[in-house]
Amino acid sequence: MTNDLALAWDVRVATLLARLPQRMRMGIEWLRLPSRRRLRTPCATLLIIGGVFSILPILGLWMLSLGLALLAEDVPGIKPQLERAACWCVRTWHRVRSTTPGRDRPA
Image (cartoon, rainbow, N blue to C red; front, top):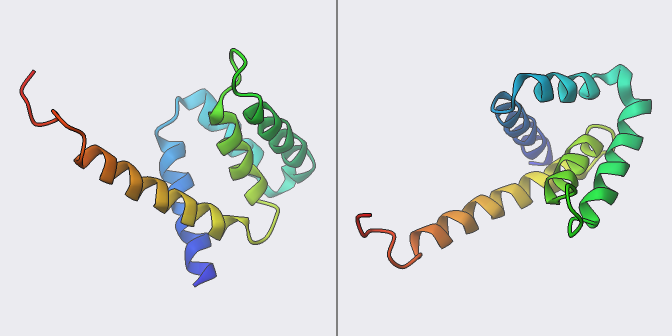
């Protein structure tokens, strides 16, 4: 089950990377290469710290999620947890969107 969740996380990341602008996608793919581990871990740590300070301009919660995704490449056990969290977020998002009042009204 844990391997299934880790594989599902890898598929989710690949799908999201395909949606990014080419330059950003290439940078993240470069960081995800196994030979970049020594660089990836400090980058992930800095992104997580930046995500914690998301109240400041330019910094944002996107940094936290990207940092965790990069860290998951090297730390065993994070991928399944991130996949569970992502599934929960998707379920919650769909539930909230389906119960939003006034969504069915024409503009």
